[in-house]
Length: 88
Image 1 (cartoon, rainbow, N blue to C red):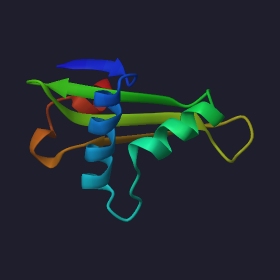
Image 2 (image 1 turned 180 degrees about the horizontal axis):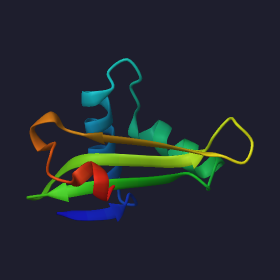
Image 3 (image 1 turned 135 degrees about the vertical axis):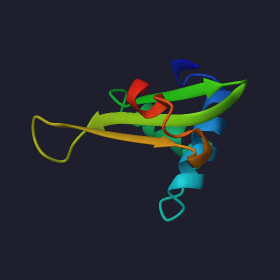
Image 4 (image 1 turned 30 degrees about the vertical axis):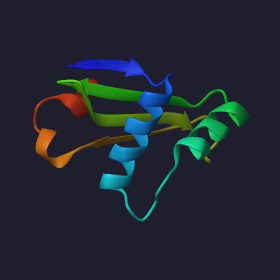
């Protein structure tokens, strides 16, 4: 398994695919994710790749509460319980 910062188009496509599979009521697009990152460079997007496939993603950024941060991790159901979420 490899954990890395999402930087390439492929990373952002995989990030969106995992996010949308786990959180269908809060869908995102690659373009929207890149726009957010350009407007708010303190955002941090991670992907977890296993077997050549992005199977998990993570996001960290500022919280709406002053002095706090927010973290969201998503892992595909068939890849859970393998330490991917913890690594992210």
